[in-house]
Length: 309
Image 1 (cartoon, helix red, strand yellow):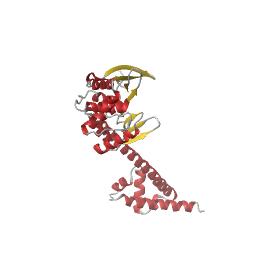
Image 2 (cartoon, one colour; image 1 turned 90 degrees about the vertical axis):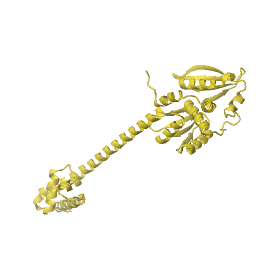
Image 3 (tube, one colour; image 1 turned 120 degrees about the vertical axis):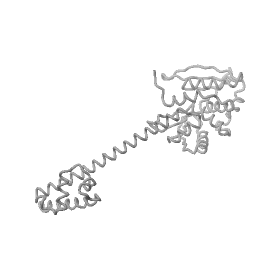
Image 4 (cartoon, one colour; image 1 turned 60 degrees about the horizontal axis):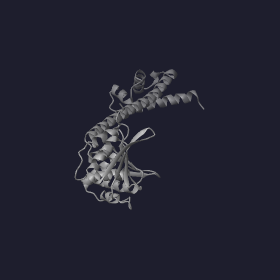
């Protein structure tokens, strides 16, 4: 059995929410705004809604059933490029009057009716169910609502969401599609909570925390690895200098404090300067660093004497 995507898991929870009898028409409006298409024919005007999931299609049918006998609903399955979609045709005597009831004006597709918080919550639930998606947070923080048209209306919706939820919401558009998107994990959680997701939000937060822990561990490992590389490079340079001095004039020729550091470095090539300082009973690695710099200068001076130019 094919595993549900994270987006499908979220929607499967939403479609099972109890329908708000007071604001159900706003959820219908969200469906229609995002996926509605008017079909004009001699047999009568119809509203077409094409949805990618049978569960969201069932939800829309349940919402439309609350309209009573006013509407006649036809349901069919269509296949495109191996993918199934579900078309719902709604036939109503006065389609214009019906659409106006849901805040959709055929002469002004950019029109967005004023809504209180509960109405807007149901409206956004309908939009997300019909045209929205959310990525698995372990992969990326991304939620979007995509429409074939409606660029300016998405700008208005983004502004309302930003103001109401205090989150960053963006929009973009191409020649064929307009998108509303949220790219922040916290912003996505606030949006999902707003439209009624509970179990999915708990899972989303848990996956966000796992991602954060994984990122923290990776940063720590990278930091340790980088430190180890720097320590290894620095240690090799120091060891090469000490061995050169020993070969040319002998370690015993070094002043006592430098000789002690040189011998300790040769015996502990893997240690950092901080660890060498601890072994020497010194409070600061800078003291060891100064001594190493003096040793490096002595080696450099000997090289110049060996190969004068």
